Amino acid sequence: MFKYKVPYVNLSHDHSLIKKQILAKVSKLLHRGDFILGEETKIFEERFAQYCGTRYALGVNSGTDALFLSLKVLNIKPGDEVITTPNSFLATASAITAVGAKPVFVDVTPEFNMDPKKLDQKITPKTKALIPVHLTGRPADMDPIMNIAKKHNLHVIEDAAQSIGALYKGKKTGSFGVANCFSLHPLKTLNACGDGGMITTNDASLYQTLLQLRNIGLKNRVESDVWGYNSRLDTLQASILNIKFKYINNWIQQRRKNADYYRKNLSDVVACPDEQKHEFCPYHLFVIQTDRRDELQAHLDKNGIETKIHYSIPIHLQKCAQSLGYKKGDFPVAEKQAERILSLPIYQTLTLKQMELIVRSIRKFFNK
Ligand SMILES: Cc1ncc(COP(=O)(O)O)c(C=O)c1O
Image 1 (cartoon, rainbow, N blue to C red):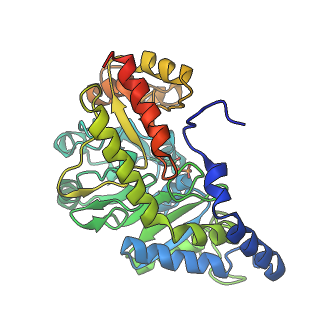
Image 2: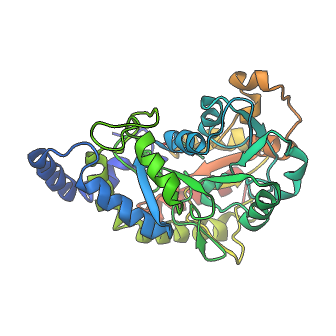
């Protein structure tokens, strides 16, 4: 069925392990019929908030909508600037443009995340918020980021789309900012069978407004005091997510074991991500770096191993970002990384045999 001996992800296999449970839930839901904002959505939201250590979590249509609605609820609008990183998925910046604000980029550290040392010089009187992205699942350096935000009176919205389960100094990502955003896209570690996203917050008033914003602005069946959107997490998706959520910690442990295996066997031939004492990385992605990235990717492809690049074009160099006025050379660290990065399969159901094949193929490429 697959072109690859090792596909980048294997959703059909992952789902075969829990298919019975999923079908039983779907069957119950068809009987009950509470398809929109139903009981399972509420249960999932409560579990999610508990997992992240926040007072509230609410389900929305996607990670992109989570970012858009978080910006919206904080009244970020045309004329405002929001600082984020240029090496994220396009959605981070497009959510900023969707509220009419201007994305301003700051370069990243060797760990792929917002470089707090370069933040001050990007802040202007128009800056209203920072969106640090926990790229690959590795937490951004939140202490200095939160201090800078406090000093300049800026909102922090975490883009935790890739970082479910990550800890920074013992605290979960998605619990630092005023509103924080997760993606439940099928390629994420905790994934729906379709689109889905979550916002976490400790702020009761933001939470109440977000409940309205995601549901056409309604505060009850008939009344509204804000214009809103249709961005709800389907009960069907929440039912499936409630099943998957039971396994999240086991999956993360397995991903961490896989990461250790790669590190042990590849660190002498390619740059592998390390993990510092204050971090707990869930390895949504395992990104290696080499100057011969394109050749290596082609070699692995020939050997039946599928890899990906997250992401090959930094956002400031995308055509859609032209009007922002950036050029090649503006963010040298992110640009260099974009030429060298390669994401290896890291999912929890990867077998030792598959990882051995990956390691063997990479070592062979480097004649090691
Ligand atoms: C860093 C980052 N931000 C935002 C998103 C957007 O999430 P979604 O695809 O659920 O809209 C994603 C995932 O696709 C992502 O990886």
